[in-house]
Image (tube, rainbow, N blue to C red):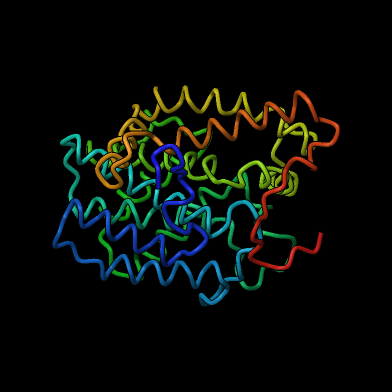
Length: 302
C-alpha cells in the first residue's frame, strides 16, 4: 500500500476484537519480547463475555456508542501510546503495562447493567459510569487475587477517563501510574474520535446523553454543532492535563508500520473537516451525509 493511501482503519480489522487483541500482544512483545500474555488473554476473554451478555450476573451491553468496539479501540490506542513512549526511552514496567491495558478493557464497564436491572439501557448511568466502572474493576481484581496496591494503581488510571476529572488531584502511586493514567485518558478520546464511523455514531451518543440526563445538549444536531469545539478543548487537554503523551503515537507508527505520521490525528481531523462541511452546507439534512454503516451489537428497537 502506498504511503498516501494508508488509513488507520486499513491497518487491521477493528471490528474483530480478536484481531485487535493479537495486535496488542504483538506490540507488547516489541517492548518485552518474553512477556507473558496469559493474564491479559484471560481478562480479555472475560471482557468479551461481559459485553456479550455471557458474564455471570450481567446483561449484554445495550448501548451503541460505548460498545465493545469502543473498548478495543481504546485498548489498542493505549498500547500504541505505550510503545511510542518506550521508543522515547520512557520506561514502563511489564506489570504496569499489563495493569494499564486491563484497565482499558474495563474503563467503560459502568455502562453494563446487572442481570436484574431491566429498566432502560446502560446509558442511564452515563453521569456515574466511571464510578461504576471502578466498582466493577475493584470487585473483579479482588476476585482474581490482585493486591491492594495493584487495585489502587488501576483505579487511578481508570479515573483519568472522566471528562470532568482534575488529573492533578489524583493521588498517583508513582510517576509510572501517572503516565499510564494520562495515556488512558488520551486513548479513550483518540479511540472514539478516530473511529471511521465516529460522525455516524454521534446521534447515538446523543441518545445516551438524553437517557443519562447529561446537560448541555438539546438535540442530535446540537451535539454535532458542539463537537468541533469539543475537539478544540480536547486538543488543549492533550497538551495540558494529559501531558502531551499523544505525541508518542507518531513514533509507534514509524517503528511498527514504517509510517512516519500520526494516523490518529489525521483521521480525527478528516472527521472534523467533514463535519464542518456538513454543518456549513447541509445542516438541515445532515443525516443524508452520515452514510457509513454502523455495526449494531444488539437489537436497536428505536
